[in-house]
Amino acid sequence: MSRTLYDLIGLAAGVAFILALKGLSHPKTARRGNLIGAFGATLATLVVFFYVSPELSLPLNNLGWILGAMAVGLAVGVPAARKVQMTQMPQLVALFNGVGGGAAALVAIVECLHLGAKASMAEVIFTVFTVSVGCISFSGSIITFMKLQELMTTRPVIFPAGRFIIAATLVSVIGVGAIIVALGTTPLLVLAALSLLFGVLFVLPVGGADVPIVISLLNAFTGLAVAASGYVLDSVLLIIAGTLVGASGTILTRLMAEAMGRSLFGTLFGAFTAKPQDVSGAAEERPVRSGSPDDVAILLNYARRVVIVPGFGLAVAQAQHTVRELADLMISKGIDVAYGIHPVAGRMPGHMNVLLAEANVPYDQLEEMDEINPTFSQTDVAIVIGANDVINPAAENRPGCPIYGMPILQVSNAANVIFLKRSMRPGFAGIENELLYDPKTMLLFGDAKASLTKVVSALKAL
Image 1 (cartoon, rainbow, N blue to C red):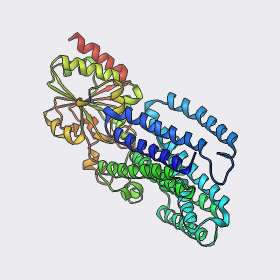
Image 2 (cartoon, rainbow, N blue to C red):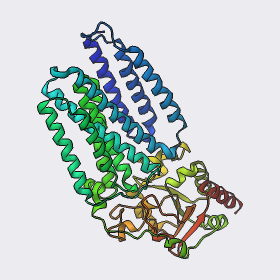
Image 3 (cartoon, rainbow, N blue to C red):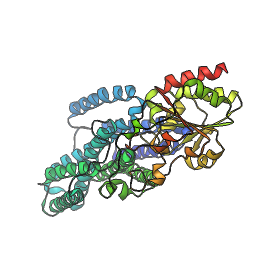
Image 4 (tube, one colour):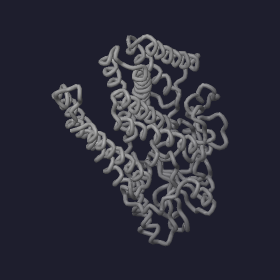
């Protein structure tokens, strides 16, 4: 295969990636967009095996090692992707993203060492960029995985002089990078080690509620690292793919930061300046109004408008099909039903949309935050299923708390609020929700799927 044909096929794969992003922009075309992206990735992988490099007598050296590595990747990746639950999808995304950044860094190191003294100044600069950004993405993604999986605390991890230590580490990364550009490739592994350390320090101060934003930012980092490695490897396809990932990740990060109502700097380093918050367990000692499935069914039966607010607890209980059954039953009784969707509900953007799509919930019943908020004052019942931080009034009235300033779904304006919760445990951000103690709030304790099934049965009997 000639270089011209190779580049043209790579360009076709790049076009497939662009069409995939276009398809993923809307739920109705998301599946098709995902398939187009998979086709582009497959094409980009296969074409490499048929390209004869001018420097090689065969299409590829070490073909056995390459095929073996691919087999290992398939053996690990396919079962993981098929078995992962929807509640664990953000963790999987974080891991895949980290692997991508780490791979780009390793490839750039190997290629630059292979080039040796023949490497141009531009190639060395792009290698330094790829190694540093790729390693930051790798170690940072591992920390986000651990936070999401609750293998470590989800609260911000701060330490004395933390800002100065982070700044000093970043300066060290930049300094070693400058030395490599000026003198040669000897300290590449030192650069990688410092970058890995900075990635850890970079993510530790981020609280659980902000982790999805950091995942998106690290995804953009990985894209930029891949694009830079494409220059080192003289691969147009890597440049296109990496640039697309970097650009889309940057846009998504900005949109998510806006949805959280804060700056990106405040998301990453706000924990160092935030005032200490009392998140202790006084919640169990305060009176709340709990109810039974029959109480909830009676309240719903006489409602004219009901808004369902899904959250991570809905995903944990896998109750989306039961929610759809309840909504259909209420609609058959002439009740106006809508779903209030917060941009960052769950653990990643679009988490609730994907979850409800599994249950074939009509897309026109889903209303974004800006659309649904003005209607809560005319809503008879708001049913909150596993959500906490995205409806917590502390975001509006408790300055200094980790979620202060984040736009929320204003369910407190509804005439009645029903909370489906397993316990009084705070949400992912670790902040107590005063709405739980409001006299108009009724708590229905237990597994969301089991509780909703009982509510459906009770409502059918009325």
